[in-house]
Length: 134
Length: 55
Image: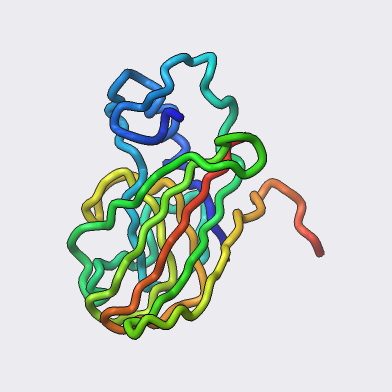
């Protein structure tokens, strides 16, 4: 199991630096997937990304809530939280943050994999992503 | 922080946090449809391939 900031995701913070209203969208769109694999920095997609209906491969991601939190130094960590509730059954194995709310679009910023969690319709997973900056 | 919000409220480059993201974690809590909270998993950042790993 691993959680990584992807190589393509490394461009997102620098893009957010530019302008009062950066053209780089905030990477707070939460996606999940149902295929196996270990997250790696070269990844650009989730493993078998699905919609809230875990049998569907198209649709929307869920916008998370972002904030600054403290891990070591004050406000050194970017945090996104969000809860995804399944509307169709499946086993969730990985999740990530994107800068776009549509499945199969956008840039993958953070990705994490974990032991598969079988969900029935109505079950939910609350995600908390944290990226700590030096 | 420049990464949050549509119009980030941090403007001065001198105030921007230096360096790259160095670690990421993902916390997961599963709640069943009946309200039962089952488990919390924390997945830490992977060890970079360039760093030595324990035998």
